[in-house]
Image 1 (cartoon, rainbow, N blue to C red):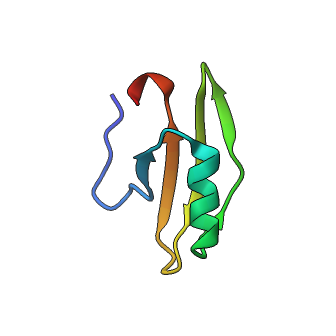
Image 2: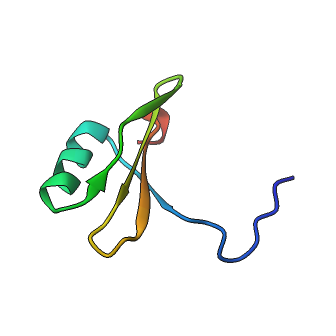
Length: 65
């Protein structure tokens, strides 16, 4: 069992339908965006930081949309 301690979660996950379109929107709004990485089975992730420096993760999982 993976036990996480308070304050160790560094990013909030946002589940999106189209990760490419979502990233383009965040780039237009000034976010610093990383590359999309594919972890298999149609699951993709991308990390970005908002203008305030908060970190986020976009997550695309086809069966969750």
